[in-house]
Length: 256
Image (cartoon, rainbow, N blue to C red; front, side):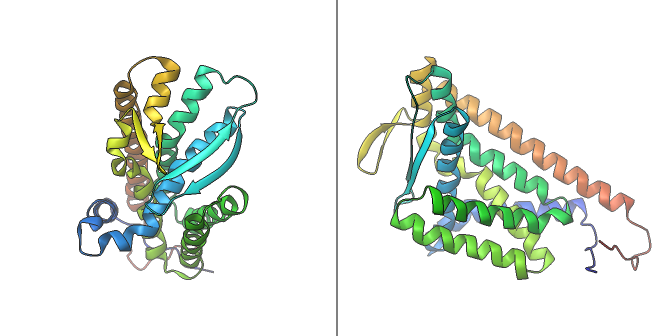
């Protein structure tokens, strides 16, 4: 039976999360950083557009296809049966920025429990591949996403425990902070995507619910911070609890 790794101290857990956040935020500033981060840029767009798609299905719409463009932007195409309600339009608009935050929080929460590390990675890889089979309809998505899924699956299958956990935390932070990559888009009323002028997510919410787009951008940012902060607080508390409950004998063994 596999040996369960020694519980991390809270400082170790915080350190790993800081490293993950630093890689997400500062790697693009380094020489060739954008090229190294490109698969993850496509992944963050996938998180965002799948957020729209899942929200559309939750609202009773049909999620038709997902297009990922070479520049890292994307479009989730869906339509409603009949005249869409204002609340459903707002829900679909909010699904893009909030979906990645929810997924990121779940990945961070999973990183606090050893038994969830590999299943969470397998689940994410499987979800990516399933979306490719059902919705993705662009060359960029059809090429990049299976490679990303294969890499995540390989880490879950063969990666060491420490690397599997760090990958989970990195992906959680990547998803959770993805809105920072689209900060200007979030606070804009419209944008040019794929050569076409389109309402931004907050612009679509403004059209549905009247209040200005910047109000919804602030509200989404605050809600995202609350979700991520709560997940981090829980994950770190679980780490501290695991350490406090571990035997004082450093040679004690933890078994699955």
